Image (cartoon, rainbow, N blue to C red):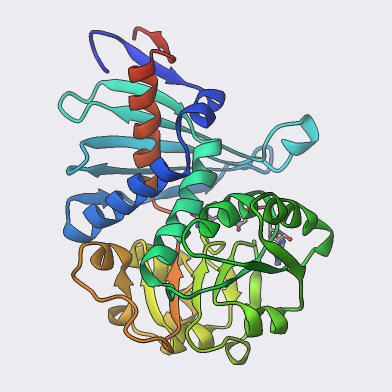
Length: 327
Ligand code: NAD
């Protein structure tokens, strides 16, 4: 796929055609396993305010030796884009040949970011939620939320979706997807959501807790996906401390993830947090009983981006659909 045939260019449309939820699930499950066994590692994240166009810009990179994937996702957040008809989050993945360092593919990162983030919580549900989970709770109704709902719905035999969002006018997009996939939908209060849901996904930009400890019933699995920056918070730190905590990467979880607040206050120790890859690899039992509350802190790591981009590049090469360029 590299030197002789030139650089592959895989645009956003092609990514949507070539990479689906199942492929993303498998790629993310595999890379989480590699991270836990030491076969894959993420490099320090760079994220800076540009001081221009109000933009945040950065890099997430890593190397998966097991999967032979090396690269970087570059991009960020441009708040003025929506007014120009563009997505505020913009990113591109650069993949390199791990044997030579040559650039092998440029892959659009916008669709794939939503897909891999949804695959991450789906992997957590597959490994940690009770098998008899019937009600899926959604907190958040932004761009990521429909990807999250579709991927989660495939992991258990759900019958119903209950949803709450700080901006209720955004909820119809979730109702539409729930209807499309044949699930009953109910907009509820936060307390009611906690009382009904067996699995809860949080995917907002909140800086204050939206779910409190006393509202969550025994046996619930929470996938906290929105907190990916210092200062953000979606659930009560007392709730975090009362759960069995899993994450994609401990270093990110305790600094920019949902556990940052409980760890800072001393309510949760870093050593109590388990990488989900350990469960995937069979080195940790995961959920131990039906009443345990499990929490997955999905912070979003570079290797997730590279994993799905690599699927896109491979499929583009196989199908002959990608543009090629020489360097
Ligand atoms: P979006 O802008 O489309 O939607 C934002 C969501 O957060 C909506 O539900 C909105 O009602 C809610 N919200 C906005 N401001 C809020 C506030 N002050 N308090 C509480 N809720 C608020 O964003 P999106 O693309 O759906 O992303 C949602 C979150 O997920 C963001 O925080 C984003 O950074 C995060 N994210 C995480 C990962 C990851 O890998 N963990 C990946 C992508 C996005």
